[in-house]
Image 1: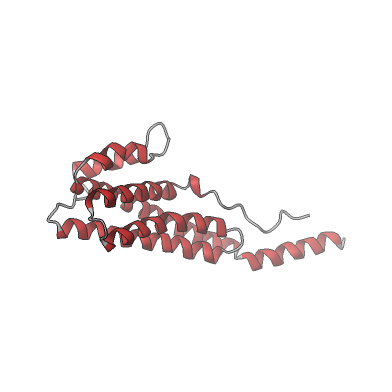
Image 2 (image 1 turned 180 degrees about the vertical axis):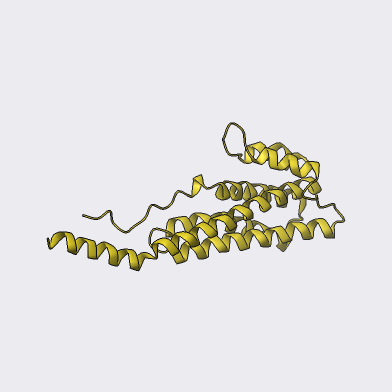
Length: 189
């Protein structure tokens, strides 16, 4: 008897990249409500990019059971969506004459510290809620930008791991063939 060919999948809520994408989505919804004019097309674009970043991580994780190719493609779509959102936040700051924090800015370092969570528990939206819901547009945009950089870094690492797993284990067709051959061999003896 074989262990089967459908690999463990769907544990996306434990991925730190997903957790960060969820914070980014919630923060983006709040940002758009607070700082963009109703009817501005940018609202839909930003919210959909943030949603796509989060949803595609989940969908890729679920699809990984039967398609490593789909998993990798959807993880990359999540990465690309967050990049699109990053550009929107950068555009907002630039076109409104607001400052973009540098990587070594004390405020950016503080966001990274908050984002790391406490007691080994990953940060949630609640950690950032007071800042996102009360601070000015410049601060909120920069907080989300910091989170996007973290999420995209993690997604880049996830893509590399997915690539390596595919190289090592192949795709579903190879695993199905291997499982079938092992089954036949064990039943013919």
